[in-house]
Length: 390
Image (cartoon, rainbow, N blue to C red; front, side):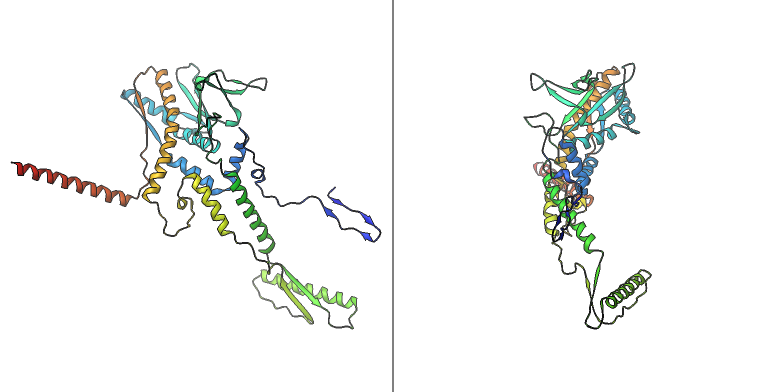
């Protein structure tokens, strides 16, 4: 029952409403309890609730850049590069870079990423590289810290080790000593995200109530000779004329409201002041953005009109990207090593990432000019010293 009524001698008691709407849309953030696998949905809700966090993860993925390989055998290098460029990765995408983007997205959001190398039917090549949902697998540790197996759901609905472990890819992000699953980039964000969504939800409801202005038209009967029927008729006339005047404003015309008697018009909610939200929102956003490692202005947060990327910020961001590349490199090496062995190549190879370029082009050109000038001066000094010796 939505309403409960209770009869009393003096009349009917007002109804008591049991259900109350108004919870913020990301309510699971308020009931968050960190578990082994259940927190993945929380982290995805954080990305959906805070666009700045979602944009930061995508920027980290884009800044990680593309990858290529260098082999001692030129023939093997050309064939391996062609494979990395054209290998299917599912959902209509091709290329190892598309695979890495999906793999890194799962790594940053969930704290771990799972992939699979799909061999051809004859077992002499690799048909595809696929990413899997981290919720569908489980890591089971063995007798030693170096021994672990990846488990999936079998035909009986139980988790069991998958048959071909050598074709599975698993990467944890900053794994801790007590579990092998890694740590998500968003692990410390649910509490602050919950506060932020509460602020925005309250702001939205206040604008729904006060943004669309509502008027209260009060007619005070100062004439004692008017009976109740006459007062009601006058109220209906005032209401009709007021509605007509408000309707005329929709057509772009201005219509005055003229009445007789003591009539008072007020804006409902005009006396209530909304809480100032800029300071608390900025404090929360500073904490969230600091966790991602992305400079605020790169996410559209212009907290300082003169803000630009300094050399210190560029160095820190470069170190973050380099750390992500170190995490992904073993996965690429495993894929390349397997492909080379399947095709009968035993040559050495090296994974080469694109150069990270975050500095201002003008500053880089000026620095290069200074280096060339210093080198020229050094050569001139060395030449002068040789002439003096002669």
